[in-house]
Length: 432
Image (tube, rainbow, N blue to C red; front, side):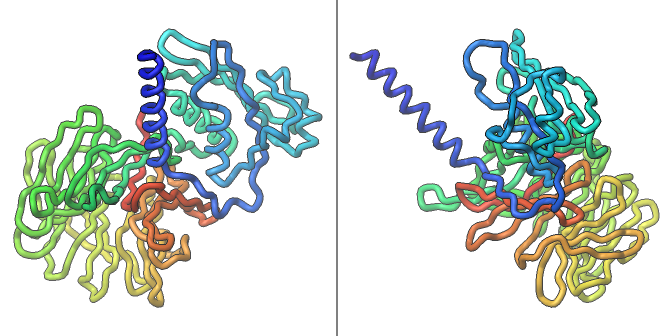
């Protein structure tokens, strides 16, 4: 009887933990897709081990491709067969369904994990495009799936995939009647959401190091804003600033040796650069207006930042070697929170025109502006490392949620949290 009770209690505990984990995840809601997505089928993969796998790898790949907005995966119930290898693909059957590509694969157990061998076949060309392999540990089935989706996406589109990346964001909820703030980490599809650190005071402005091993953020845990850096693997933290006044907007340089930030230690909010090796702070701007929200250009030679030195918030570029400042934005009466695409050609920002706040892009060379979103409370854009999509914070009713949109505005999806408000997303770099 006692053994049965122990088993029952164990099952209850496991189920409760699973329920809590499920509640912590974000759910993908695709709200706008490409009008002419490419039909593709990811056939259920073969499995040569015992038991049932904890994740359906083919389903994860299908979901990744669907979320890009560029593909329309064939539902399993519509498939006429389930080939496991290219020589099992009956082209006539897939042409009937209008399918352009078929993905087949086999998963094998390894000593410490799994090996996925997968193939991409062109139906209309009746030819195999590639056979590739991806391996991972016991807890890495989702990673294996995301990496396979990246390979498939790049082979067809010519653009490097970004499914095997992550995001950090801030979640605010209530615990014991008091506000709780958490710095969260999750797969880019919202899965495997987990807490990096919990705070009783606000935390904001998370930013990835270029190698993806650390994050920087602003915490009010000391009673005033302070900038911290934290190692994601070890949890080791270092407080970088302890000045009176404003300490905000930390952002790593592309080579990881410096960090730009905003400090008011000399009276006015100005842009500073901290050398992370020597601990030396260098003041980069000197103006009576407010200079804030720095972000590095990809070559590390200049910064873009927000300033109201022209009367209203606009985006400026600071050349570090000379100190020259040039205004970049002129369209609209408010442009802020700028981010630069990985190729250095596009500026993403929070833009206001005629009283409406949206996320917009601007071609840096031509100045041409494009509005990506339509709602009035969009903020904190962060660009994917392949430059194809960006994530941002918005509102749905009274709830703060995350959303993503392609830089051509053709694809959009929401990532609402099932627990609390979420905001300030930061898309990770590639981890290789």
